[in-house]
Amino acid sequence: MPQDAGGAAPTRLTAAEVLRAAQRATPGPSLARLGALHGLLSGLALALGLWLPEALALGQRPVRLVFPLLALGALGVLAVTTTAAWLAARWDRGLLTTAVWAAAALLVAQWAGRLPYAGRNLLVWLLDPRFFGRVVYAFDAAANVRLWVAGFFIALGLVLLGLVQNYRLEGIRGALTRGRLTARAALLLLLPLPLFALAGWAAQDNLYRPLRLAPQLVDEALNTGRAYPGDLPALARQTGVNYGAIDSVRPLIADAPYTLLLGDMDLGGAETVFVVADFANGAWVYCRVQAEQLSHCFDASPPYVQGFAGALSGAGTPGCRPCTVRVAPDLAAWLAAQGTRFSGPPHITRLAQWGGQVLMRAADPAGSFAVECFYTGLGPYVISDCRLA
Image (cartoon, rainbow, N blue to C red; front, side, top):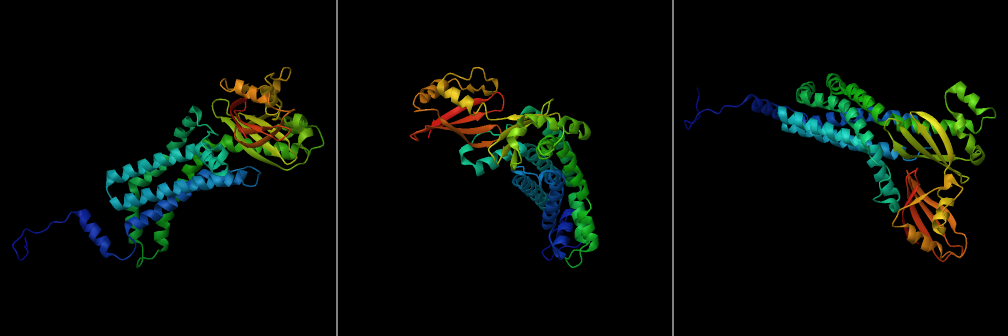
């Protein structure tokens, strides 16, 4: 066995060290750079599967927060998959690579599953600081179950990628010509992307379908039903859309433009979603969608206008069941005391609404002061906290 000039024992290199030395001697991008590119493309395919159906279904409808929410979701997925692929390629250790991708799968599943709730909360806080810190959309047990079911599809694709990533990257690198992308290298790079898009699509149907379908049904009922000159129940029997649900609010909405916003949502067994419709003429409508069927629409204002006035007077709203509102126990006396200060019937307006959180204002007719209160929930309606303005 040959020795060096000093008579030292020969240096033995492991197979992995020989491979890395060969990679350093080969011109072209490093495996880490190829890994980052592969992770970016894989994340993009996954994001398209997750949110392209949402963009196609709601992008042309007057639904608030659609594209900001989708952009937030896609950026989060791309950041996780790109970082995970870069780290896995850089470290190049079998078990460690698999662990990196398992962690990435968990992060992506949590991100996608919580986006309709925590993501919307974050956007609301950024858009309207008055709601900062408020849980506008609550993540409940039913949403958590959906997250883990959908997470299976996401994890399956990402962990499989982790198991074979570095073998594939070596093949892609070997298919480069002088460090440049060839047709074969591009094919190897793009080959698994449909798998990730399919995993995203399978996950989104479980996560987002009820939340996507509810505003679609309401938009269809409002847009078509209010202009239909004939019998709405008969039209419903022909089309399968419950146009009759808007019968009670038809006189309010006329042909005014409107925007839609998701209100409260409970994705348990009944899959109940409330959709808020705001009309340019001042009409304010809630529509309830249950088990993917439009149930009914109704005037939203009574508990916020008459109910607020009744809470301020301390007399309540006897004889008006839709006006019923609850007041937080530690707030009732304070609110009634403020009511005695009004010089006349208060001028009540809605300042803002996000989800089931509504900010109402009752101003003194003389303009000397006002009381602003937050309502929480869309049934029962609760005045949760107030302040002088």
